[in-house]
Image (cartoon, rainbow, N blue to C red; front, side, top):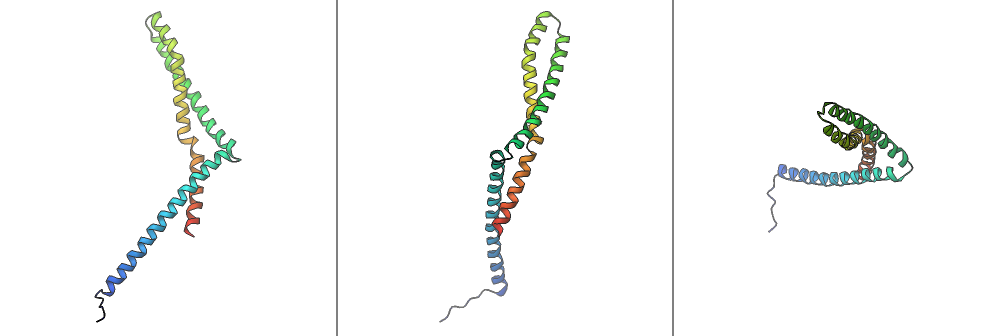
Length: 139
């Protein structure tokens, strides 16, 4: 006796659609993975390739400007503290600590300088690489 399939037309079409969606999700995952790999490779190549000097210079410029601004602000804070010191002993202690304060201010300023502006070129390079890898994996 032959087997009878009791699935309705609606059930069969919904199963076909869900199978198509599963395939699409798998393909999408592969495309995203290929895009991320391509983006990371593009960023790494930007430090190794011919644009290496430009990439490093763009970061050094932001870090340098931030360091200068940070050290100026820290020096102002140290000078104000020296003026407000009550005794010579306190003034000497603040003057000794001023070098450290200025160095820390410069480091914080450099970090802030790199924070957003310094990594914009890397973000753009990653986005271009991602788009290339994503589109190639989809074809």
